[in-house]
Image (cartoon, rainbow over all chains, first blue to last red):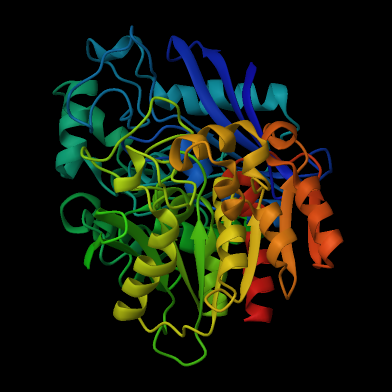
Amino acid sequence: MDVKQSNKIFNGVHQVCSHASESTNCEMTFSIYLPENPDSSNLKTLIWLSGLTCTEENFRIKSGVQRIASELNMIIVSPDTSPRGEAVPDDEHYALGQGAGFYLDATASPWNKHFKMYSYITKDLLGVITNNFDIDTEKIGIFGHSMGGHGALSIAIKNPKLFKTVSAFSPICSPIKVGWGKNAFAAYLGDEISAWADYDSTELILNKGWSSDILVDQGLDDEFLDEYLKPELLSEACRQKGVNLELRQHDGYDHSYFFIASFIEDHLKWHDQRL
Amino acid sequence: MDVKQSNKIFNGVHQVCSHASESTNCEMTFSIYLPENPDSSNLKTLIWLSGLTCTEENFRIKSGVQRIASELNMIIVSPDTSPRGEAVPDDEHYALGQGAGFYLDATASPWNKHFKMYSYITKDLLGVITNNFDIDTEKIGIFGHSMGGHGALSIAIKNPKLFKTVSAFSPICSPIKVGWGKNAFAAYLGDEISAWADYDSTELILNKGWSSDILVDQGLDDEFLDEYLKPELLSEACRQKGVNLELRQHDGYDHSYFFIASFIEDHLKWHDQRL
């Protein structure tokens, strides 16, 4: 693992790291915030998954997460949203290819050589951070935004032993039912729709449930809310399965990082109380 | 004035506005954060001046200023760092031309048609915000970073009735004595060095003084500290003139917005107490 950049912020350091990933078959980049005393005991870690078009950078420079991570003495890890590079396939549409990995393992050509973001997050990323930093693997939570909210929910539901807590901002709650997801899943997974449900948070709740609670924040002026996000589907699935979903809806907020910054403190405190 | 963008954040809104400027002879852009109750009495305003290469955007998306502005009920205005557009001269070097206005009024060709950022800040910008928002002109402070720290200090010292308080992050304390400033001042103001001192914060302190105190934060791992910033020159001028400069030096912090974000709360509270 190489440390490519390191900046002191709120007494800790935010580092940008790169490493070779077996799953994605290319060099991957993530950032990690280490509070001032990262060797102390009882340190908790949150994995943040970003949305379409993002790299590891957006969350690092726009969310304001470091202030509260410093206060709570938490480690924050934010990976890139896809494999990258000239050898990696791409598409002209922002919701497919580089920057749009959808946190799944592609099975269809040409994507199946590199687009293995599900395995990357659950194996390679957890591996590299536990090998290089003082991570307590019993105290890891996951959260994310939009496509990353979908990623956080679907990955947590399938891996409750790896990720003890999960929350999301403006998640794509059921990608198999909306345009962004249908197009990407068809490309990455092929036409066999039965395979799609294994990466759909709403279907996963119906099939597997979730043993603790979930926090979701959603802005009501979000330009993607009605067509792409559909929190009502997740809400109904949680109701059916008796999962305690706290869906907070906020007047006037949109889909941007300005919304995330406004409520990031709540999410860190929510995870901190539960981990 | 046109509102080009508006995002809700921390219960207020951050707007991006454009307007025609007589001083710079082109369309100018600034952003303004309006807390939730901008019509209440006792509202204070801070003007933020950004550094080289920045637009109005950097401070808006990277500083985290909105959280504390919301809490203190302050208005925050951040203008662009220069005139812009195809008709506006530019230079290949990042420290001259567009993105590098140095908050002065150029007198030398070809810069003197548009590069009037001193007049823009003190006349056009104050005019457009007082005409369009509920600004108490008796309660305006100014602060900035790097080239913008130079701008804030030099503009305040020359206009103590307009700007009651001034602070800076990592300011270029004496542009006439360092590379960035010498090159830009020679281009903008010509070879008559006597004119340069009128835009040099250290010279202005020696010539005009400052009746209240000044807060400056400086990171000690700042890659530009020794060659370009030279806070010791400002410090010595303040000592000679009996100006109360609080120069805080911070181990491990660099020149980036990660440093600014770490201490922006202190600056807002410092101005709030004095305005």
